[in-house]
Amino acid sequence: MVSDHAEDRPHVTEDPEGENGRTPTRRQTLAAGGLVLAGVVTGCQGFITDRSGTTTPTEFDHLDDRPMYVDEALDLTVPEAVQVVSEPEDADLILLSDDPDAGPEEAVDWLSDRRAIGLLGDDAQDTWLSWVDSQPYHDAFDPNGVAEGEPAPDLVISWHTGNLVTTRRYGWDRGPDDGKVLTALDESLTDIGQPTGEGSLA
Image 1 (cartoon, rainbow, N blue to C red):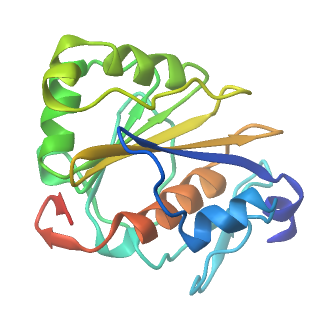
Image 2 (cartoon, rainbow, N blue to C red):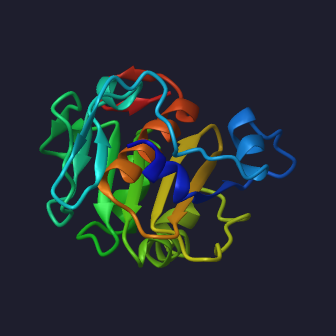
């Protein structure tokens, strides 16, 4: 069942915005070499398969330890092991649709509070770039280094570390499914770091 993920290789890019010459992590190096990042979840102890044949891990290394908010507009099935909260302010990871009710002001507040933001959908990149081009973002962060990725990603994940915002983009040839999205979120949390407290990322 894991082979479904391995065949549909994700296109993964990462931008450390506002900083040049950053040493790539081992995960970035593997991505550049064309290896599958979203193929296997280390430590995953089971899978569930829905009627469409979509295979979703039931346990994760990092999602299981971090509260996550999921936009009501998203039809995403989350395993019971993952703690889903009802308010973004209670989450370490905020997953929104590509046309969210939230705007750049909320995004800047969440990033400043060390919360990671994920945007899921065909217009995820356009929404993220519109936030980056906003005055609230310019007032809080350095917008230099932001670039439009091709092909357009299905999932954009952003988080604030130090004086910069790092953005990782995921795209899949056959489009996202629950398992691919959750695996991408889990592996991004690997690089984001450990939480410093409830609702905050290091």
